[in-house]
Length: 69
Image (cartoon, rainbow, N blue to C red; front, side):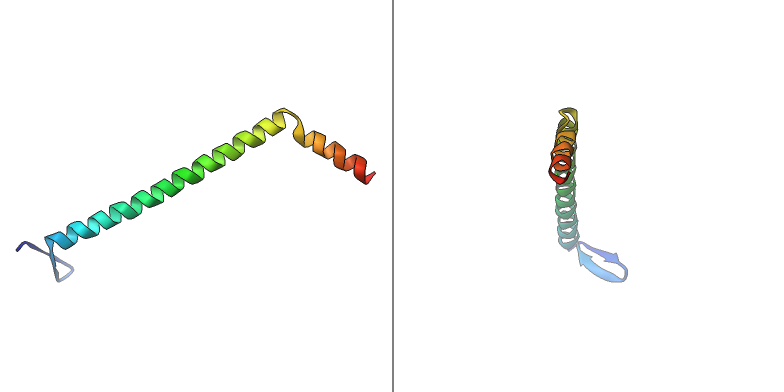
């Protein structure tokens, strides 16, 4: 059986491949999460830009000002 000595421990080759596969799966999940967060932030930015383009914030500010004063 093929073994690899790592830090003084004898590890079988299948265990090394298994650890590498787990690391790749974990890294892929982190990348997927980061992509989802990025898409959500881009979507929020686009919505805010559209609301600003159509002067929704000024309209809300005017309504609040007329209600208070």
